Amino acid sequence: MMKKKANTLLFSHKISEWYLNNKRDLPWRASPTPYKIWLSEVILQQTRISQGLSYYHSFIDKYPSVNDLANAEEEEVLKLWQGLGYYSRARNMLEGAKQIIQTHNGKIPDNYHELLRIKGIGEYTAAAIASIAYNQTVAAVDGNVSRVMARYFGISEAINTTPGKKSIKKKADIVISSKDPGTHNQAVMELGALVCKAQNPDCLHCPLSSECFAFNKQLTNSLPHKIRKTNKRERYFYYFIINDKKYVVLFKRTKNDIWTNMYDFPCIEKAHPLTIKELSDDGDWQTMFHDAKVTIEKVSKEHLHILTHQLIHAFFLHIEIDNLNDLPPSFLIAKKQEAEGLPIPKLIENYINSTELLKVEF
Ligand code: SF4
Image (cartoon, helix red, strand yellow):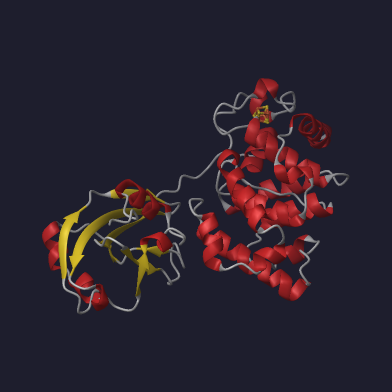
């Protein structure tokens, strides 16, 4: 019992000291503000620092404050976010910024529970902002932190289950330093990212190794436990690309689905793949084009696009059409130069780049 208590105290002391000597020089750390912490945490939840930094800089340059973000157009924000994925996070952050202007006079709330009421701020981000910007003692727990906790304290429940998450959070709230909770939280996150990595943790250079359960029991390869989740939803997208020298025909996705309010091509979706015959006979796309006379010129090979819970099988059909004016009004007929400024999903961006589709022909 005494040993357990000692480990708990040592944990915060050692890890905070290690952090102060080893932390990376990141732009939001030099002068942390609640807004910068919020933005950095949202970006880093979905990408590595090396990729996320350029997005962070573009965002801060364009929207230096929560007020600037709140006044932004959603399309502009999505365009800036393009390539990062999880576009709902960008939309939610924009909504959250507006909420802060309307209900908090533009000041990001200074406590964990108020922060949780802001759109786009979940438990992890609320804890990060509350502890780093406002010195509140609340543990921020993400995947990196869960891994460190499970290994150091020998927590055997699967960290991606509700009981496992509860155990980790409970332990994390016990060990956090009330003297400097912001440093403590950043230290655990940083150790998880740099030393206690998922594969091949660098235990020999870890400040926690002498008391670490997993290291001392040689269990670093088997902790943390995770329940394997499979079963991605498979979707088959058939995109229609209209060959035109100056214009590109796009479609704004407005349903509550992936890529809401971003632009892709007119599309029909199927739950199963279609043969060429089934495709040419299909009534859905004929309905979609209403009166327009359409000829399918060629069909691309399959393009796979993997999302967290979905696997998209995309096919691009290049078509000829008699008259662009016959197209339904729900389609956007955009000049190619203008289309470059619109937010589009990575799958579509990759296809456009590989086919030089937006090149204007004279
Ligand atoms: S000793 Fe190894 S397993 Fe334990 S916390 Fe450090 S890096 Fe992780």
